Amino acid sequence: MSFASSPLGTARPSLSGRMARWGLVIVAIYVLVALVTPLLLAAGVLPDPNAGLDNPIYAPPSWQHWCGTDRLGRDVCVRTLQGSGVALQVVLLAVALALVIGVPLGMVSGYLGGAVDRILVLLMDTLYTLPVLLLSVVLAFLLGRGIPNAAAALCVVYVPQYFRVVRNQTAQVKAELFVEAARTLGAGPLWILRRYLLRNVITSVPVLLTLNAADAVLVLGGLGFLGLGLPETVPEWGSDLNLALAAVPTGIWWTALYPGLAMFILVLGLSFLGEGLEAWVSSTGRDAAH
Image (cartoon, rainbow, N blue to C red):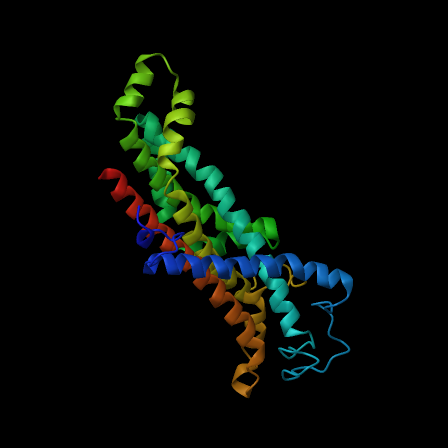
Protein backbone atom coordinates (compact mmCIF):
# COMPACT_ATOMS: atom_id res chain seq x y z
CA MET A 1 0.00 0.00 0.00
CA SER A 2 1.38 3.36 -0.97
CA PHE A 3 1.81 6.21 1.49
CA ALA A 4 -0.59 8.27 -0.57
CA SER A 5 -3.44 5.91 0.28
CA SER A 6 -2.65 5.48 3.97
CA PRO A 7 -3.64 7.98 6.67
CA LEU A 8 -0.56 6.89 8.59
CA GLY A 9 1.91 7.55 5.80
CA THR A 10 4.29 10.49 5.61
CA ALA A 11 5.07 10.77 1.91
CA ARG A 12 2.56 12.74 -0.15
CA PRO A 13 -0.43 12.01 2.12
CA SER A 14 -3.79 11.79 0.40
CA LEU A 15 -6.84 13.82 1.31
CA SER A 16 -8.19 10.93 3.37
CA GLY A 17 -4.86 10.70 5.17
CA ARG A 18 -4.89 14.39 6.07
CA MET A 19 -8.51 14.13 7.23
CA ALA A 20 -7.66 11.18 9.45
CA ARG A 21 -4.68 12.99 10.94
CA TRP A 22 -6.62 16.15 11.68
CA GLY A 23 -9.45 14.09 13.13
CA LEU A 24 -7.04 12.17 15.33
CA VAL A 25 -5.47 15.40 16.60
CA ILE A 26 -8.86 16.95 17.39
CA VAL A 27 -10.13 13.87 19.20
CA ALA A 28 -6.85 13.58 21.14
CA ILE A 29 -7.18 17.19 22.30
CA TYR A 30 -10.72 16.53 23.54
CA VAL A 31 -9.59 13.38 25.35
CA LEU A 32 -6.78 15.38 26.98
CA VAL A 33 -9.21 18.11 28.05
CA ALA A 34 -11.58 15.47 29.44
CA LEU A 35 -8.77 13.95 31.52
CA VAL A 36 -7.19 17.19 32.74
CA THR A 37 -10.31 19.21 33.60
CA PRO A 38 -11.43 17.07 36.58
CA LEU A 39 -7.90 17.27 37.99
CA LEU A 40 -7.89 21.07 37.70
CA LEU A 41 -11.32 21.23 39.32
CA ALA A 42 -10.21 19.01 42.19
CA ALA A 43 -7.07 21.13 42.69
CA GLY A 44 -9.11 24.33 42.80
CA VAL A 45 -7.45 25.80 39.70
CA LEU A 46 -10.83 25.97 37.95
CA PRO A 47 -14.04 27.06 39.71
CA ASP A 48 -16.99 24.77 40.27
CA PRO A 49 -18.98 24.64 37.00
CA ASN A 50 -22.24 24.78 38.99
CA ALA A 51 -21.22 27.64 41.28
CA GLY A 52 -22.19 31.12 40.18
CA LEU A 53 -23.76 32.99 43.09
CA ASP A 54 -20.65 35.11 43.57
CA ASN A 55 -20.37 36.03 39.89
CA PRO A 56 -22.32 38.61 37.87
CA ILE A 57 -24.86 37.14 35.50
CA TYR A 58 -24.29 37.40 31.75
CA ALA A 59 -20.82 38.89 32.28
CA PRO A 60 -19.03 39.23 28.91
CA PRO A 61 -15.70 37.46 28.30
CA SER A 62 -12.92 38.93 30.42
CA TRP A 63 -9.64 37.96 32.06
CA GLN A 64 -11.58 36.69 35.06
CA HIS A 65 -14.09 34.70 33.00
CA TRP A 66 -12.54 33.93 29.61
CA CYS A 67 -15.84 32.84 28.04
CA GLY A 68 -18.14 34.98 30.19
CA THR A 69 -20.89 33.79 32.52
CA ASP A 70 -24.42 32.53 31.92
CA ARG A 71 -27.72 33.62 33.40
CA LEU A 72 -26.90 31.89 36.69
CA GLY A 73 -23.42 33.41 36.92
CA ARG A 74 -21.68 30.13 36.08
CA ASP A 75 -18.41 30.23 34.17
CA VAL A 76 -19.12 29.29 30.54
CA CYS A 77 -15.52 28.25 29.86
CA VAL A 78 -15.41 25.77 32.73
CA ARG A 79 -18.79 24.32 31.83
CA THR A 80 -17.71 23.91 28.22
CA LEU A 81 -14.51 22.15 29.25
CA GLN A 82 -16.35 19.89 31.69
CA GLY A 83 -18.93 19.15 29.00
CA SER A 84 -16.19 17.62 26.84
CA GLY A 85 -15.61 14.84 29.33
CA VAL A 86 -19.33 14.27 29.82
CA ALA A 87 -19.94 14.03 26.07
CA LEU A 88 -17.05 11.62 25.50
CA GLN A 89 -18.11 9.49 28.44
CA VAL A 90 -21.71 9.10 27.27
CA VAL A 91 -20.84 8.64 23.60
CA LEU A 92 -18.07 6.09 24.19
CA LEU A 93 -20.29 4.10 26.54
CA ALA A 94 -23.15 4.18 24.04
CA VAL A 95 -21.14 3.05 21.00
CA ALA A 96 -19.30 0.43 23.07
CA LEU A 97 -22.62 -1.07 24.19
CA ALA A 98 -23.93 -0.95 20.62
CA LEU A 99 -20.76 -2.69 19.43
CA VAL A 100 -20.97 -5.42 22.07
CA ILE A 101 -24.62 -6.10 21.27
CA GLY A 102 -24.77 -5.52 17.52
CA VAL A 103 -21.68 -7.44 16.39
CA PRO A 104 -22.51 -10.80 18.06
CA LEU A 105 -26.13 -10.59 16.96
CA GLY A 106 -25.08 -9.83 13.38
CA MET A 107 -22.63 -12.74 13.32
CA VAL A 108 -25.15 -15.21 14.74
CA SER A 109 -27.87 -14.03 12.37
CA GLY A 110 -25.65 -14.16 9.29
CA TYR A 111 -24.17 -17.54 10.13
CA LEU A 112 -27.26 -19.44 11.28
CA GLY A 113 -29.81 -17.97 8.86
CA GLY A 114 -33.29 -19.44 8.88
CA ALA A 115 -35.93 -18.36 11.40
CA VAL A 116 -33.37 -16.77 13.74
CA ASP A 117 -32.11 -14.58 10.92
CA ARG A 118 -35.59 -13.54 9.82
CA ILE A 119 -36.67 -12.58 13.36
CA LEU A 120 -33.53 -10.57 14.06
CA VAL A 121 -33.64 -8.85 10.67
CA LEU A 122 -37.28 -7.88 11.22
CA LEU A 123 -36.51 -6.48 14.66
CA MET A 124 -33.44 -4.55 13.55
CA ASP A 125 -35.11 -3.20 10.41
CA THR A 126 -37.97 -1.93 12.54
CA LEU A 127 -35.55 -0.05 14.79
CA TYR A 128 -33.52 1.16 11.82
CA THR A 129 -36.51 2.75 10.09
CA LEU A 130 -37.33 4.93 13.10
CA PRO A 131 -35.78 8.43 13.12
CA VAL A 132 -32.68 8.50 15.30
CA LEU A 133 -33.58 11.54 17.37
CA LEU A 134 -37.21 10.47 17.81
CA LEU A 135 -36.22 7.02 19.07
CA SER A 136 -33.62 8.54 21.39
CA VAL A 137 -36.14 11.03 22.78
CA VAL A 138 -38.68 8.28 23.51
CA LEU A 139 -36.10 6.05 25.19
CA ALA A 140 -34.60 8.92 27.19
CA PHE A 141 -38.07 9.92 28.37
CA LEU A 142 -38.82 6.35 29.49
CA LEU A 143 -35.45 5.74 31.14
CA GLY A 144 -35.05 9.15 32.77
CA ARG A 145 -32.01 11.37 33.13
CA GLY A 146 -28.53 10.08 33.88
CA ILE A 147 -25.32 9.12 32.11
CA PRO A 148 -26.09 5.36 31.95
CA ASN A 149 -29.66 6.06 30.80
CA ALA A 150 -28.53 8.49 28.10
CA ALA A 151 -25.94 5.97 26.91
CA ALA A 152 -28.60 3.23 26.79
CA ALA A 153 -30.94 5.48 24.80
CA LEU A 154 -28.19 6.14 22.26
CA CYS A 155 -27.05 2.51 22.24
CA VAL A 156 -30.37 1.15 20.99
CA VAL A 157 -30.24 3.57 18.07
CA TYR A 158 -26.90 2.28 16.75
CA VAL A 159 -27.23 -1.47 17.37
CA PRO A 160 -29.10 -2.06 14.06
CA GLN A 161 -26.27 -0.43 12.09
CA TYR A 162 -23.63 -2.78 13.48
CA PHE A 163 -26.03 -5.68 13.05
CA ARG A 164 -26.67 -4.98 9.36
CA VAL A 165 -23.01 -4.49 8.44
CA VAL A 166 -21.74 -7.54 10.34
CA ARG A 167 -24.62 -9.77 9.24
CA ASN A 168 -24.05 -9.06 5.54
CA GLN A 169 -20.32 -9.67 5.82
CA THR A 170 -20.84 -12.85 7.84
CA ALA A 171 -23.26 -14.20 5.23
CA GLN A 172 -20.58 -13.66 2.57
CA VAL A 173 -17.63 -15.04 4.53
CA LYS A 174 -19.40 -18.20 5.72
CA ALA A 175 -19.54 -19.39 2.09
CA GLU A 176 -15.74 -19.31 1.77
CA LEU A 177 -13.82 -22.55 1.40
CA PHE A 178 -11.92 -22.26 4.68
CA VAL A 179 -15.19 -22.07 6.60
CA GLU A 180 -16.56 -25.08 4.73
CA ALA A 181 -13.36 -26.95 5.48
CA ALA A 182 -13.56 -26.13 9.18
CA ARG A 183 -17.19 -27.26 9.27
CA THR A 184 -16.27 -30.51 7.51
CA LEU A 185 -13.55 -31.20 10.07
CA GLY A 186 -16.12 -30.97 12.85
CA ALA A 187 -15.68 -27.41 14.10
CA GLY A 188 -18.74 -26.13 15.94
CA PRO A 189 -20.57 -22.85 15.21
CA LEU A 190 -19.08 -21.06 18.22
CA TRP A 191 -15.53 -22.03 17.22
CA ILE A 192 -16.08 -20.95 13.60
CA LEU A 193 -17.61 -17.64 14.66
CA ARG A 194 -14.78 -16.84 17.05
CA ARG A 195 -11.83 -18.28 15.12
CA TYR A 196 -12.65 -17.63 11.46
CA LEU A 197 -15.49 -15.16 11.04
CA LEU A 198 -14.82 -12.50 13.68
CA ARG A 199 -11.50 -11.29 12.30
CA ASN A 200 -12.91 -11.17 8.77
CA VAL A 201 -16.04 -9.14 9.54
CA ILE A 202 -14.61 -6.75 12.14
CA THR A 203 -12.55 -4.65 9.69
CA SER A 204 -15.26 -2.11 8.88
CA VAL A 205 -16.44 -1.70 12.48
CA PRO A 206 -13.88 1.02 13.46
CA VAL A 207 -15.14 3.19 10.60
CA LEU A 208 -18.75 2.79 11.70
CA LEU A 209 -17.68 3.38 15.30
CA THR A 210 -16.22 6.82 14.62
CA LEU A 211 -19.08 7.92 12.39
CA ASN A 212 -21.63 6.78 14.97
CA ALA A 213 -19.72 8.62 17.68
CA ALA A 214 -19.95 11.84 15.67
CA ASP A 215 -23.69 11.36 15.23
CA ALA A 216 -24.11 10.45 18.90
CA VAL A 217 -22.57 13.77 19.98
CA LEU A 218 -25.27 15.60 18.04
CA VAL A 219 -28.06 13.35 19.32
CA LEU A 220 -26.86 13.79 22.91
CA GLY A 221 -26.85 17.54 22.36
CA GLY A 222 -30.39 17.30 21.04
CA LEU A 223 -31.52 15.37 24.10
CA GLY A 224 -29.90 17.93 26.38
CA PHE A 225 -31.50 20.77 24.45
CA LEU A 226 -34.90 19.17 24.99
CA GLY A 227 -34.17 18.62 28.68
CA LEU A 228 -34.08 14.82 28.41
CA GLY A 229 -30.36 14.11 28.53
CA LEU A 230 -28.45 14.47 31.78
CA PRO A 231 -29.28 15.88 35.24
CA GLU A 232 -29.18 19.66 35.58
CA THR A 233 -26.12 19.46 37.81
CA VAL A 234 -24.07 17.81 35.03
CA PRO A 235 -22.56 20.32 32.55
CA GLU A 236 -23.75 19.40 29.08
CA TRP A 237 -23.54 21.35 25.83
CA GLY A 238 -27.13 20.77 24.72
CA SER A 239 -28.69 21.96 27.97
CA ASP A 240 -26.39 25.01 28.02
CA LEU A 241 -27.50 25.86 24.49
CA ASN A 242 -31.11 25.62 25.59
CA LEU A 243 -30.45 28.07 28.44
CA ALA A 244 -28.63 30.40 26.06
CA LEU A 245 -31.45 30.45 23.52
CA ALA A 246 -33.39 33.27 25.20
CA ALA A 247 -30.29 35.43 25.66
CA VAL A 248 -28.97 35.36 22.08
CA PRO A 249 -31.53 37.86 20.65
CA THR A 250 -30.47 40.38 23.30
CA GLY A 251 -26.84 40.32 22.12
CA ILE A 252 -25.50 37.88 24.71
CA TRP A 253 -23.70 35.60 22.27
CA TRP A 254 -21.04 33.96 24.43
CA THR A 255 -23.36 31.61 26.29
CA ALA A 256 -24.26 29.90 23.00
CA LEU A 257 -21.04 30.28 21.03
CA TYR A 258 -18.62 28.26 23.12
CA PRO A 259 -20.68 25.11 23.84
CA GLY A 260 -21.94 25.14 20.25
CA LEU A 261 -18.41 25.55 18.90
CA ALA A 262 -17.11 22.76 21.15
CA MET A 263 -19.81 20.41 19.88
CA PHE A 264 -19.15 21.36 16.25
CA ILE A 265 -15.38 20.82 16.46
CA LEU A 266 -15.74 17.41 18.16
CA VAL A 267 -18.23 16.24 15.53
CA LEU A 268 -15.93 17.54 12.81
CA GLY A 269 -12.94 15.70 14.26
CA LEU A 270 -14.82 12.40 14.59
CA SER A 271 -16.21 12.79 11.07
CA PHE A 272 -12.75 13.47 9.65
CA LEU A 273 -11.38 10.43 11.45
CA GLY A 274 -14.21 8.22 10.23
CA GLU A 275 -14.03 9.38 6.61
CA GLY A 276 -10.26 8.93 6.59
CA LEU A 277 -10.52 5.44 8.03
CA GLU A 278 -13.22 4.53 5.52
CA ALA A 279 -11.06 5.60 2.58
CA TRP A 280 -8.08 3.75 4.04
CA VAL A 281 -10.08 0.52 4.55
CA SER A 282 -11.42 0.76 1.00
CA SER A 283 -7.96 1.27 -0.48
CA THR A 284 -6.59 -1.58 1.65
CA GLY A 285 -9.32 -3.87 0.34
CA ARG A 286 -8.53 -2.94 -3.27
CA ASP A 287 -4.81 -3.52 -2.73
CA ALA A 288 -5.49 -6.91 -1.18
CA ALA A 289 -7.73 -7.84 -4.10
CA HIS A 290 -4.95 -7.01 -6.57
